[in-house]
Image 1 (cartoon, rainbow over the protein chains, first blue to last red):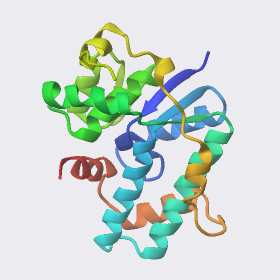
Image 2 (image 1 turned 30 degrees about the horizontal axis):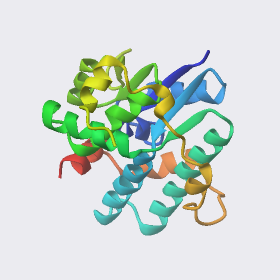
Image 3 (image 1 turned 30 degrees about the vertical axis):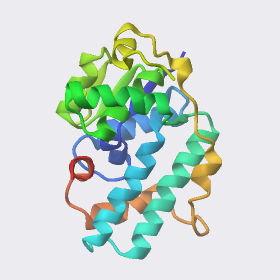
Image 4 (image 1 turned 90 degrees about the vertical axis):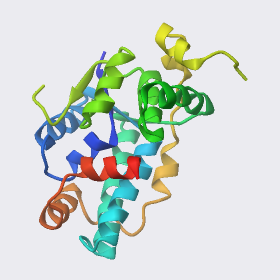
Length: 153
Length: 65
């Protein structure tokens, strides 16, 4: 059975922009394309990808047309991988939101961090990938295997 | 609606993988504009030439602002 990797947005973006940890993500996406692993993301990740692109557009780092091109490419990649059964996009159901409230108050996570943690838990992922030390430490606390993609595996 | 604390359910494994549902891909496709002539290499080339920071920092900023 293929390993299932849950990608936090902080890890997901490294496939499309070369920065610290991108080599790991390029390797993981390659493995997914070859049918060796399954990538899991939350639908919230798509919102955050668009949010991040809009942020750098507002700062005039990229133009309107470049923002549209990049968004289209990333969304098309997600559609293609999902249709091929190599990626799963997980819903954020009310029970996930409810469970996240406890994590916000007890583990001091931000609202989205907490939703990502619970979604990863219910997605049946074998390992959670992110580039945020505090988030990863909280994942470990609820018993999930983690990988900080900005460090070596 | 459940009235029990969900965190204890998580700790005890009562929230199960089968509780998860997948998003229909049509939802994502509906957001794609244009003719799709660009590929991942093109997106990387634009981002790498324009943006010198880390997206993990932008994501952190979005979640904590």
